[in-house]
Image (cartoon, rainbow over all chains, first blue to last red; front, side):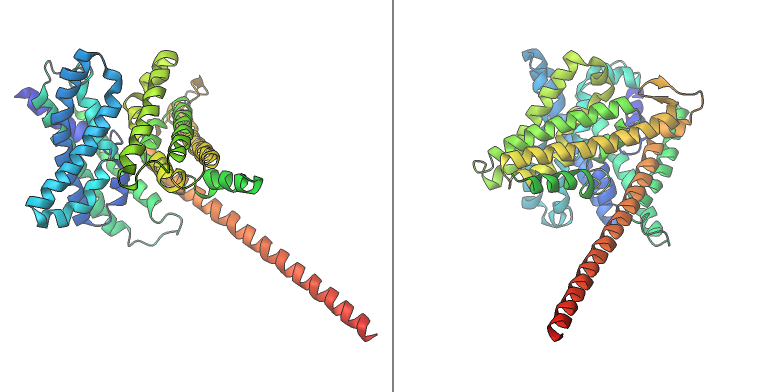
Length: 201
Length: 228
C-alpha cells in the first residue's frame, strides 16, 4: 500500500513527465492552445502509456533478458508502441465512434511521443527504478500504476498550460516573443512550482 | 549535385530551417540534455551521425518502400542506427552513455530525424539527402551546444567541466531554467534572423535600383548620342 502511494506521488508530481523529466514537449507546446484539445491529448496519452507499460514490462523482463537480447529493446519497444496505437485506434473506431471523432486525430501522434517510449524505458529497468523510488519490489502492477499516473501528471501539466495560454496569448508583447518563447517562459514558471515537490519529500 | 544546390542545402539546414530555433523540433533532448556543454555536444554529434545514415539509407530505398508502410519502415531504419550508436557509446564513451541515459534511446522518436526522412530523404537522391542530414545535424549541434554552454556557465560556473568561477545560479541547471533559456534563444534567433533578412532585402533592392538607374543612364546616353 505504501509502495503504491510512493509510486503514485512520484509518477504524477515528483517525476512529472513534462515539467521535471522533459518528456513529450512537442504535444505540450503544440496542443495546448485550447483546453479541450489539451485534455483529449492527455487522456489518449494516459491510456496508451498504461497499455504500453502492461505489455513492455513483461516482454523486457521475461522474454528479452532470459534470451540475452536486451540490446534489441529500442526496436522491439517502438514496434510494440506503434502496433498498440494502431490497435487502439481501430478498437475505438469500431466500438466508440463519438470518442474516435473527439480523440482520433491525436492517436497517430502518440507513436512519436517521447513520453510513451520514455516510460517504457524507465519502468523496464527494475534495479534502477526501485533505487530511484526507494521501494523494495516492483512488478507489472507497479509498472502499470507508474504509467497511469505519469499520464495523469502529463494531463495535469498540459491542462494547466492550456488554461494559462488562453490568458497569456491575449497580452500585448513584442512580436518576437509571441508564440513559442512566451509559452516556454510560462512553462518555466510552472516547472519552478513542480520543482518544489522534489524538495518536500 | 551542383555547387549551388549544396550551398542552398547548407544554408537551409543550419540557418533558414534550423531545427531547434526556427522549426522548434526535437525539443525534449534540447531541454533535458543542455544543462552541460559536453553532453550537448555528444547528443548533437550522435543525432548528426544518425541523421546522415538514416537519410542516406531511406533515400536509397525510397523507390522500394511502399507508401502505406513508410512510417514504420523509417522508424525501423532509425531505430537500427540508434542501437548502433548506443552500443558504440556503451563501449567507448561510458561517461556520455550514462549521462545521456534514457534520452539516448529516445533519439528514435526525435521529430527532427523522422521529419527530415519524411520531408526530404523520401523525395531526393542519396547524396543530397546525406548532405541535408549533415547540415541539419550541424544546425542542431550548434544550437544545443550554444544552449549547453550558456546554461553550464550560469548554472554550474563551469565550461566543458573546467571550473571558471565560484558563482552559480542553480535555476539555470534545472528544467525551469531550460524552458526560459530556450524561449529566449528562440526569440533572439528569430529577431536576428529577421534583421538579416531585412538587410538582405534592402541590399537587393538597392542593387536592383542601382542597376536600373545605370541601365536608364546608359539608355539615356545612347539616345542622346543618337539624337546628336
